[in-house]
Length: 531
Image (tube, rainbow, N blue to C red; front, side, top):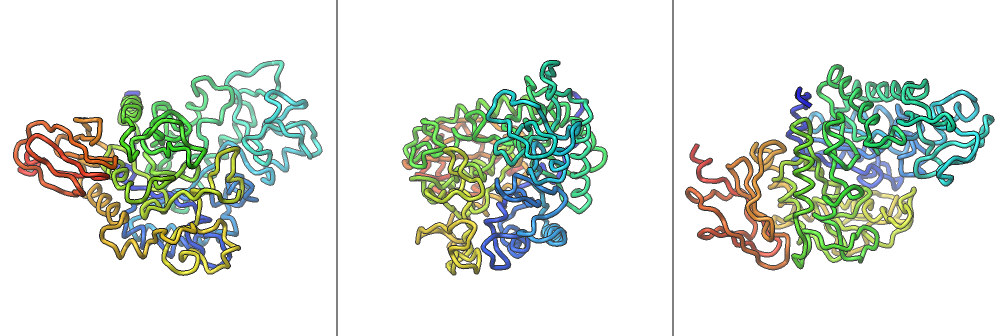
């Protein structure tokens, strides 16, 4: 790439916050969170310093997979409210300086979507991928109950028929492998723009795109999928230049050149995220990769996998987009997980909010909500051995019934509230100046007021062991110790005394940084302060 693509300024300066709608705030007492509940709690996000929220799927659905089985892309699910409630939320958020992004699921629909109901009865309709016989792999082909007979390709669950965006490598003996420019794939590409255009017109600022890499099938190197998203990006740059697309791809080195404004380091693709803050103890039983992560109390982790992945992604992105770094998400364990307590995770936020990434905070992580093991499967949350429900429990607002999430009976809640009597709450954390919440708020405020700590600008690593030491833009020094024992690192000669901006347990001595357990320090270098 040579010509720079347009990136909305708001995205470059953003602090994002992911909301799982059914677990955030219930305004009508039915036990399930809703859009009105989110609107009622926007002041918390504004106080925290969040500038954009991303809502997990909130479109009409039968909720066999928690809303990732969409039955109508243009209608809010009744459990969450109405399209008018969405408009109220978008306007109320914008009045507080917060943008709203939605979750787009382009690779499949619900089997109850009108497109599929039509296709299931109509030979020659190729919005989906059809075969007259079971193809390979057989587990992905589902018998059709409609008049046309045959089998359809499903993504994940049988209720999620795959939309047809074509195959990069068609084959005459496999007629379901249509080329990317066939009628069905062209119709689906047009529908993507129509859906986005509808919500952009209502004030939505962008989409996080589910499984963005998976649209074109049998696509070595994701070449055709990249072309598809490159066309979408060109359209957005022309028609909606203030809007953005975030990819659930997990490989920024590929997705950003393809056209996305940002992509995440994710748990399922490469070691970058797991090597930072995976549980790694086996106590949760599903996420651990057998290696200690950097956010390990014993200090057995290494930053090398993360830094290697970062450098590769940064070089490939080449200023055309941002690499998003989440604290957690609806599919991955929270920062506070297993033996890791909320008193241990402030260093994780210090890294996330001073590194040249796009920070994404998962709801509740700012107060140290924990991954809760042993919960029942709810709406497809138990995917094989992956117990994702532990990261989807209700937001903990106060010490009232159901932690202030809902007035419904406890047995009617979407998922149980964390039963730990010592669970943190927003109200309790706000009242405690030493809480994790106040650490996170101070770090967000510092990032937003200090351009050198933002998503752009150089980073230079001075010490990659414990403590982790780096500079931003040559003007700011960051020291982060994620282990439970004191750590020291040599410092280069500094011109004058650095000015402390946010310090928790770090001291700068002559030529050395001394960091207490689970500590961090952010400083302005004297040369910069004197400019």
